[in-house]
Image (cartoon, rainbow, N blue to C red):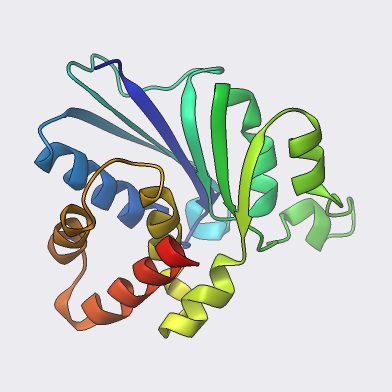
Length: 190
């Protein structure tokens, strides 16, 4: 199998590291060679956070270069737009439509860009945009956006849902397990 590349992008504190851990565990359990690399921005201050997940028969490097990502899973809309150059032809962006203002917007030095989903689609990017925050809140916590997005990503993989559930069980503390399972289900089936 050729190596597949997934970028998980977001803003610090959104749960992208748990999502990459879950995804890495799932793929490893399915017998793939997996490499996961975390690239942090100013994650403690709401800065950009990027994680690479690469899997296949044999993976030699954890880094994804521009034009190589099969999927970009984005926790925030501007982060999705920022990383589209990393998509390969035929790749897909799965994004939460939530908008979190970066520092230039907060200070008034810039405005949050309008129409980002339409701009990405107009540039030839296949975009699967959803209000993952609303689904996470429906599941019981705004912090479950990560599992909503993993549920949506699961629709594009030929892996049994049971394998995803096992990875969730192994990755999430037991007291949050049912909440995260609900969030995954909502993302997968919305």
